[in-house]
Amino acid sequence: LRAGGAQAVAAMAYGVENLKRVDIIVGPGNLFVALAKEFVYGDVAIDSIAGPSEIVVVADENGNAETISADMLAQAEHSPGSAILLTASKSLADAVESVLSRRLEALERAELTRDSLERFGAIVITRNNEESAELADELAAEHLSIDTRDPEATLKTIRHAGAAFLGPFSPVAAGDYAAGPSHVLPTGGTARFAAGLSANHFLRSGSVIALSEADLAEMADDIQLLAETEGLTAHRRSVETRLGH
Image 1: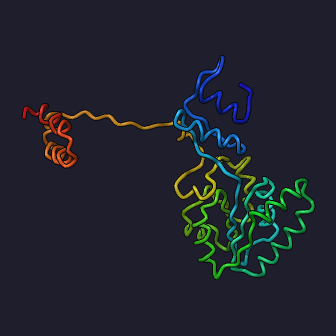
Image 2: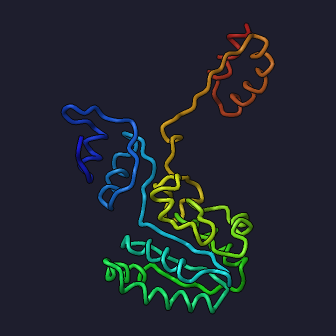
Image 3: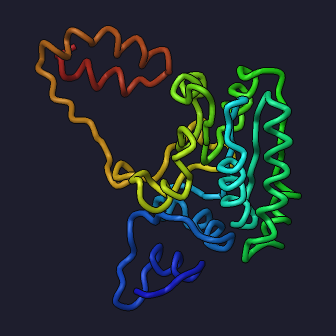
């Protein structure tokens, strides 16, 4: 089926001629696709409801203003796209602001990118590097870029992010197109409890219980106590019946 938009989501969720309904629908889309996926959830499974693209950059005085600005613009040009720099370095913050203004004019989507930066962008000067990491962890961004003296050490202090990009030679675009991780990542702070699209979304687990009489007898008292506590007499008797009580 060659189709897109909310109508494609509906076709996959409920089936059309020559296309049986599917079990799960995954992948990003525009606002209409996101709302359509939310609507059909329950009839089929979905991976997530992806929001606008976002990046949080954590940098110290060693950060490169040119590469930081480039990554912030790359997210903002999605329009809407959020781009936030967290740094304790006033000089780096000033440099990034200057480079953003200079680079913005050369973009094909300059007006849309400018609008994104004005509405959803920020350069935040923190008290120290530790506060930068704490704020990044609280934001739980889709993309986390770390440009510090020791990016790996900084990453150890941040638990929540869709994907982390360490050092000046790890642009988000590499993760989008070539480096290997999923391009479908949790947005809007949902990285606190969700992960990016992976093969795991197409797997499910189940349980198989096979007890001997001795096994059941060993746990019978616990089962019966819990059943009685919940007022579920038939649950208790389903154990007693098997053990001849």
